[in-house]
Image (cartoon, rainbow, N blue to C red; front, side, top):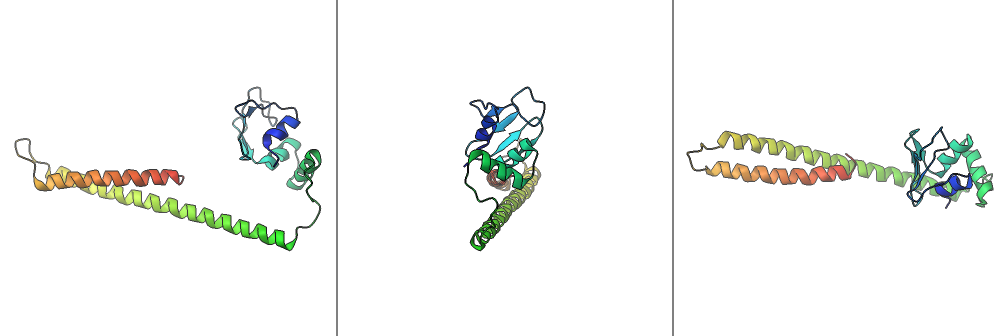
Amino acid sequence: MLSCKTLLEANGIKVNRHGFAVCPLHGDKDASLKVYDNGRGWCCYGCHKGGDVINLARAMYGCGFSDAIRRLNADFKLGLDVDGKPSKRDSLAFMVKQINEKHARAEEENKRNQAEKNYLDWLELYRTFDALVEATEPDRDQEGSCAFRIYLKLRAWAAEQMEVYYWEWIAYGK
């Protein structure tokens, strides 16, 4: 797999050990372009562009998708059949991959929405128990009432559950 680092270095742009390089897309003097490991792409914090190696080639060479593929294929001898028509099997495999990715995104979105709903439900319960604690709080002279102690425990339990779902919501990309 061709990496962004390889593409940059082949074009005379040094990438430091932290993955930063001078961005070739704008008049950059500092290393504002970050190259991520394992083919995860690149991002320039100066011109706010990013993507995969093909997006980088398109931006560097000022060309479209097909021309960028052809140029990468020629420059790096990738051996791709860029002019051939994809087989029906390849087309079907691509469509299945697209459908699977769409379903995975939808499932992720559903999980995020459910975590958000759970968090908000527990927040509402917390507020209810908090109001009950305030309403049943005994005077300093009196010994604490049974209802007050129960509401305190319920409020603490709701706060714990709220925190669990908050972090789950964050994990799914709040």
